[in-house]
Image (cartoon, rainbow over all chains, first blue to last red; front, side):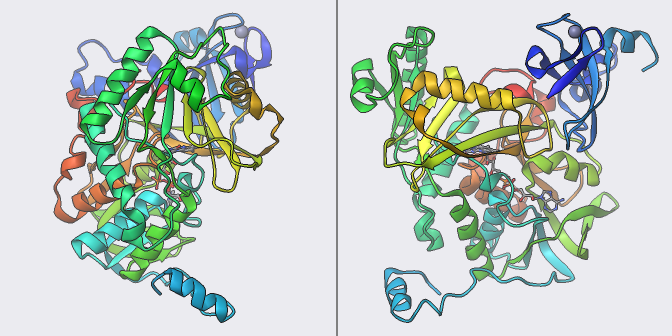
Length: 90
Length: 416
Ligand SMILES: Cc1cc2nc3c(=O)[nH]c(=O)nc-3n(C[C@H](O)[C@H](O)[C@H](O)COP(=O)(O)OP(=O)(O)OC[C@H]3O[C@@H](n4cnc5c(N)ncnc54)[C@H](O)[C@@H]3O)c2cc1C
Ligand SMILES: [Zn+2]
């Protein structure tokens, strides 16, 4: 498995750390209520197809990356810097 | 036919012509009292106990491929009951006691072998934790001791005792742990359930649920609609997908775990050995192959195959611990999709849909739980109450904070 880092290009998967679904970027507002936090921390779509997820290019530029990857084939459709995703429209 | 030494002898003399297929291959009926989705160990054991313990025999097990084609036929078959959180201690102790009587219960040789399990310790602190773990086992009557370094050297002369990174200080010995033949467990429960009238329907994928007023009334399948009063879901790595068909989400991610087996060798490994610090565990199958595995690949996946970095890591850990395996040839490797919960413990509970029950979240430790998991799930489906040995595996715990986080890893499913 190779991952296309927007900064460093195509790199070996071993340079990256996986965190989880990209919904982790959408932390609810502090007053959003308990249920919103339960959903945020524990519950997942866990789709059998396209999945948006967070990888850290730990042994490279140390940027967080939002990747879209197919859970059935492991094929990456896109990779973007998490910082860009956060700034732009989600 | 009841299996016995006499039948083997008699059939041997008559050309082995009288053996019959072990389960029927029925067409699905229009309706059942209970439909179990997923023909793995948990689904089949659940159907068996529904029929045997609760007298509910109008049951179908729907399997989209062939039974045992999922994780139940892909695991490294380790059985143990050396847990430490209250909920897991009582549940896995219940499981192992059912294992001890399983072959008599099913009249089927599942090759259950309590060859014992060694968990290695590499520091003073870890040895104290091992002693604590052994005490937990003893309290449940499941056998637990601490082995000194000398005892380890005597029992396992082939380990590398000079590893500077993880020097071996001793071990926790769990004599009641061991292995069983995974396929045989699946087939044994299938045969047992079939003989009690359960329909095992293979090549039947569940594609949706008919839900009326919040209550499930039937199942849409690749072989047509099947009406039912209750549904029991036991689809392991596919739990997220099947739950989505019923309109709810789970605190679960699907992750791939790989396993490996070498060519058959003469007996060299009498026990199961766990090398936790190296993320490596190994045993020898009765056929002679060394069966071993490591950690999850680490990313969500529905592909039943992993990547090379984890294979490399597992091979390195194996060589660090047990250099003698270096000359054996790897025969096969494969992957299975695990239902990883956010706290590493399973869920046996109702769901947001009425009459729709879920058995899931086995992570990569649910083979040993097939006995007790099936028993507890059948109990819940039949009576509506939690089985006393499995009353903490609720879905609600993720809201109430009563998590069963055996490893203390936090809400990170890939870490459990
Ligand atoms: C590599 C590996 C090693 C492991 N090692 C161990 C170990 O040493 N010890 C241990 O205790 N556990 C181990 N496990 C875990 C253990 O294998 C599982 O927890 C256990 O087998 C789960 O059983 P199950 O019946 O829930 O799931 P499965 O056996 O996976 O059965 C689920 C079934 O549901 C079917 N299904 C899915 N979707 C549908 C649908 N829509 N319609 C109909 N059917 C469907 C699947 O085809 C499958 O057959 C390991 C797992 C893996 C992958
Ligand atoms: Zn980079």
